[in-house]
Figure 1 (cartoon, rainbow, N blue to C red):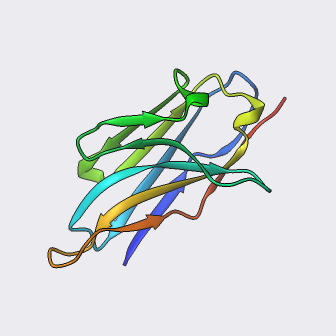
Figure 2: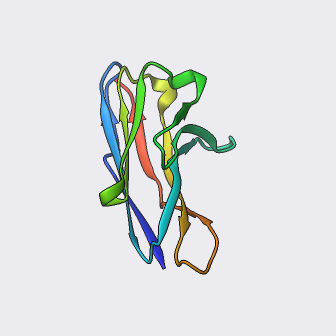
Length: 121
């Protein structure tokens, strides 16, 4: 089994910063893409940022220039540095990882439990 454990969410004022972390552990042979989605009540989950095993990145238009995704392959951890936060960034943030648990299997998508980010004065 693979577990994703997120941390770093919380309450921050507009214009502030937060750094989310998501550490994968368990049976991991290979890890492909990792990243973050977010969701607010009543809306669909939306991609925030993703990063491949080769460190190629993609971002939602709404966060470009403000958020930075990175990963530490040795630690199987993905980070999301969020700067210049806005109230509309308020959401539950979920990390994901495309994981191959063993050499004789395929990849499957694993989700974290979610961490709340609230941007408010």
